[in-house]
Amino acid sequence: MIDVDHFTMKYYGPPAVDDISFSIPEGAIVGFLGPNGAGKTSTMRVLAGYLSPTEGEIRIAGHDVVRESIAARTAIGYLPENVALYPEMRVREYLAYRADLEGVRRSDRAARVSDVMERCLIADVAEKTAGTLSKGYKQRVALAGALVHRPPILILDEPTVGLDPKQIIKIRELIKELGRERTVLLSTHILPEVEAVCDQVLIIDRGKIVGQGTPDELRRRGSGASIVRAVFAGDVPARDVLSAIDGVRAIEETRTDGETRVRIEAAEGIDVREAVFRQAVENRWVMRELAGETATLEDVFVRLTTRDQGEAESAHA
Image 1 (cartoon, rainbow, N blue to C red):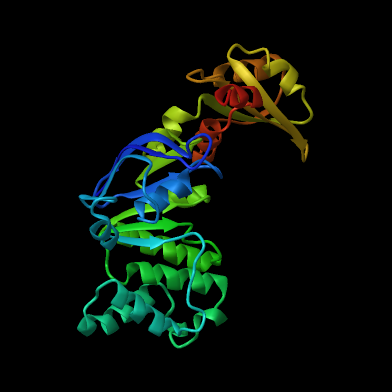
Image 2 (image 1 turned 135 degrees about the horizontal axis):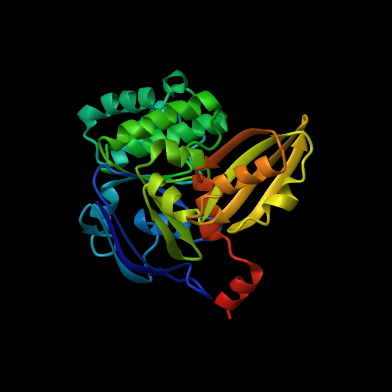
């Protein structure tokens, strides 16, 4: 449904997006992640038809975003990060207006508007003007506007910003439901949201795609380290002793409530649990806990999008 082929976006200086390619199939929910300035917003604006690519080809539902711009945009429901509503319009009136702009037949508009208000949890403010609504309600009204013409593709930029925890759960459930009917590209800074909702993940940094796959795939191959957690009774010199184990790269140690807790990072593929256990026995430490830790999507994201200052300077030299 979304095909991006050697897409580059330039403004001035280095490209904001630098020769990226990816495809998103029908019925997939894809999380699009990246730090500020990574090229994420530029990519989403080009996909939504707000900007034209400098180079490359992008097709939305089979339509080229430049040569068939109207057809491509018709296939999209777009929720931008910064929601813009007409403050003087009532919610129902605004959604009917959006339906008209999107080409929904007059005979279908009332039913479509009622449907999206129920799905986006805004039926209780249908007769209120948009300017009087809270940020969370405005966000949901904008989402309803993106859905009212039932597009096959949704591009959602930070859809749960400003919502309370109960509303976030409801909107996540709605996004998962929508993913059974259409393709969804979801941009968010909330990584647990990606793990809860998305089938696939794209990670962009400095204009390049640096990670792609399911959340499980990225966790398995992208952490770059094996993590072990251990807890010992009392105050023991765990860091000094365990740092000598072959393969150990770093140790975090904390002492609290009569325990010494350590988080051990070893080279990828090396399991140091047996060595930690042997050291505990030899030093007569009481071990209360020893377990391997699965890398989180946050661990993977940080690793893929963080470089030291020297490397960053070299990349821009």
